[in-house]
Image (cartoon, rainbow, N blue to C red; front, side):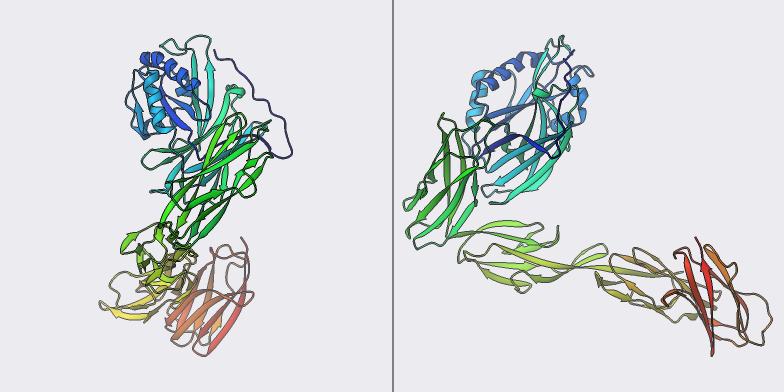
Length: 619
């Protein structure tokens, strides 16, 4: 059985920074291995892979192993420990056989592994500069670990939508006897957990921007704490690993800013700060900086005016890039190389844009469409345009999604719905602002009642107030007299009650159904055929009540009747009935389910008669 080791940690009042993990500019190649403790060929190929990985510079390559549940199901304890994440990564790549490995997600390595084959794949990737810098900090508090990834985008990506993956790796797991069927007892780079899971976290990367993503996990007592390490990698939509990060034994590099824009046709310069923000514990070797232009271009020179050696940490040096008037329009990469006294090398890059500029164009709300140069987009776009070039920006309005509509409001540069922009060195972004509208959906029940709804089936600005009304409230239809009863509303802020003309606040989609019947009103009924001599309004019963009560009143004459309920501040909270009533004795029903406990007043208005009484709602 595997040796169990309890993770020991001291409680601190604040989080303690325990390690810095980074790869900056230069590439750390990621090898993702699919294996199993029940796979015979895996037992032959794993030692070859392990030997290869251990023979390379640990700053330049890292491995992670995803264990599978075949060929013999149920016998691989590393798969059983976390089947979900292992399956997600297998499905992501469509792996149908093992052993199998992926170099940076795009180079497939099938059995049988060989040192020359693996070295060839590694050499294909190791010198390709990463477009991202990843700096990872992990902090412990008791058995909880917080992993923070600082991702700096150094270059323009053709597809900026990526996924950031957090993995917890156990470097070496040893069993005293084989746990599976293939005889292996030692397993390396075992994936224990992915945060939040094997699907990762979506991220959109733009040049010169810094992104911070944090995840947390708890140490499991079955892990050997000294073998546990967090690892972070960024993967593009075509599955290419753009950058990976692991614990460094030396220094890191980070530029600020990531790019500079200068005009073409005159002598120009740009200044960058090259930082060594984090170093490994105990590291004290000076870092000497050099810079080169890619592609090499006559007229572009680099220098470090204040010196090119960083000997205190964190520390920085100033990089100055100069360009003459003869330098053609273009995007130039400045590769900055840092070399320690012991010969350890790391690289980072900055971009020097001559006569070009990076421009963001996007909507203020996700998924809304707009056009750039007559091409339709539905997410923020990042362009590299020539200074002085002209482009067409166009809003698309209206845009309707079900019962929600979006209308063009403004461009951030105050331009018209469709307008031309001429790019300058000072521009950076154009945002199209859309305002949201919600529909007030109205209907009549039963359908066919020939009443007219005003203000229904209309879109309203969010935050506005809709005036809804129905007329008439009494009519003849199919040889019967029909009476408006009440509005039945749904949606936050909707109105339910007998007022035929309510005001409704609009903050979402509202549905209002006008209820009709052949009796005068829901909740009001004639008690007998007698005609009273005087008007009267009786005390409600029961009182106090919860949540319903009855109100009796008498009408000596036919006419319009209105019964309304007010709170203690005089605000109308309900309309029990508003319509025609014949002379007689009546009883009204009032349901206060939607009201809070308290004192309320009900008022009867009939012809020239008015009366008010008090009632108490106790819930």
